[in-house]
Length: 170
Image (cartoon, rainbow, N blue to C red; front, side):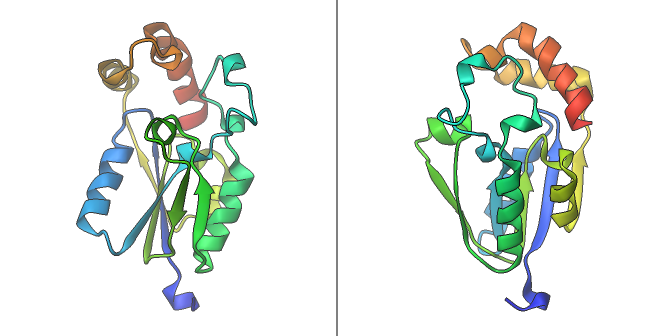
């Protein structure tokens, strides 16, 4: 792909329930032929790579395969199609094991910890951070939580999620 035809890569970050996915879904519906979406959450290490039962705090960057994400961003910027393993809870629940990112004119990657890595930030042509108050974050997260999920427990949301937001997202 020639330099003038390189994909424009936009990173959308923000706290849990700040509207990242809502924006990405709206863009995808409006411009389906021009946009590729990459979900940062899919880069979490698989259950075979790390023991999920031992994780107490899910708000940490070291749970994600950031080196693989960096390489995939370079590849897509160079006009290559990227096929990546989808390890997020949402992908796993939907039975999705891999996703394909085509080098379309606009590549949008979203994730709450997306801007935490300097090398990833440098690869983004535009960085968007969706600001959300802690009170609104907690309210929205409690409204959408899944009963029985450790990371959706009210105590987790009020403690580790909020602390992770302060330390790793903001």
